[in-house]
Amino acid sequence: MADRMEIAEGDITKLAVDAIVNAANESLLGGGGVDGAIHRAAGPDLLAECRTLGGCPTGEAKATKGYRLPAKHVIHTVGPVWHGGAAGEDDLLASCYRRSLEEAAALGCRTVAFPAVSTGVYRFPPDRAAAIAVRTVKAFLAGNETVDSVIFCCFGQESVEAHQKAMAEVG
Ligand code: ADP
Image (cartoon, rainbow, N blue to C red):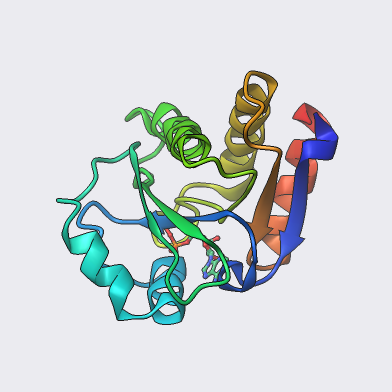
């Protein structure tokens, strides 16, 4: 399974994969962080399609086209805001990864890249989030043959190290 999961560092908007995942908010109408970067790179048609989706609950995922991005599709998922860990954050974050991969598989995507959902403005602890991400993706890949490989696209060294540690423990 480890050969179907990979860690990369850098800007997810540059990746020419079948789908990149966006760490969006419930409105799906754009925001800061990776969401802002994806909308800037994709152009205004992405926001126009997002307006037709009617938002997205936390833990869920919805797909759009990629427009000017090198990626064919964007899977918008809404991560949980960290409230200390006793408010169902772990399960909601796992659901983001699972539901995003289900959407990607339904579109026939073979390569999917994730940012570290919830670890920016939503303050989810990076090590804990990376462990959930790697565990959930591994479990999904074990039962799915459409999605071939998943890239954890890390922004910064702290995130890279969190995912390396998680891969060593879980992958
Ligand atoms: P959230 O609200 O889910 O916490 P953020 O966008 O604030 O979302 O942060 C999620 C993660 O995405 C953070 O690790 C942040 O450093 C990272 N990030 C920000 N911009 C990019 C980008 N262009 N490519 C990949 N990751 C990014």
